[in-house]
Length: 97
Image: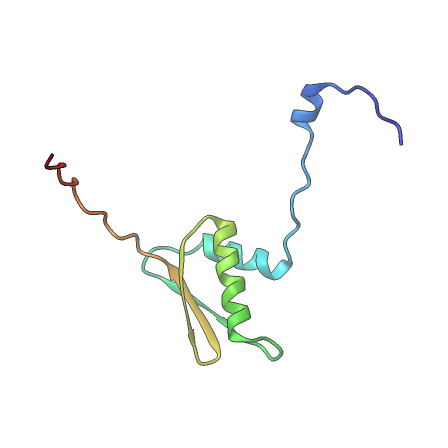
């Protein structure tokens, strides 16, 4: 192994190799990105898969897409939709000291 000096600008502009996602996960991310509030989609559980694994994969894809999801298992499907953000309460009370 040989170590040499390198230019810092080259390092900053070099393409970083990120984690390569599976085609199934990439398909889920695209489906999640196309979701609109008030709409839901479902993933059909195939043989050899468990509902928990499919739900975990859906939630992982949601995290990768940067969206918060609400998921539920119904029969042989995993349903998912964008999670509605709850409104935060108003101004906090003053400290009575």
